[in-house]
Image (cartoon, rainbow, N blue to C red; front, side):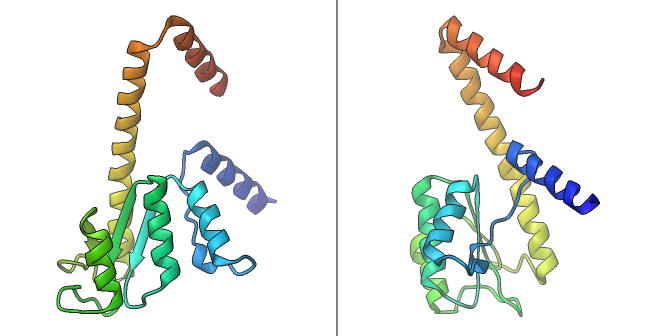
Length: 168
């Protein structure tokens, strides 16, 4: 009973956006990867891509789908044992160099060793997620402020009524 209630409470917090839930589409087995990936991207508010030793076209598709949807994106290069990407000419490093690096900063062990083991990578990702979440909250606040400054009174009243009903 405790586990069921705890899961229900967690799902509600995820639904409200209070906590984050990872969607690992590579583990989907009962659907085609493309369908699972599209569903995962549609449900997501942020994309975290971890690239390493193995290259896969589905993972490349996933990254491009997140870009096309306009999601905030965090990308990491990580291998075990750790090494930097520079000097390694693999399909993964070519993809990162050609498709990702012109648009985004690649963290992890791309340019220098930032994560020596899995836990250091997790810490790095969690720290970056916290920073990205703060950035998104600031962006939403700025947009809300701009909207409220220019919105007619009836629109402002509707927004305030909706906000009040959510927190009752």
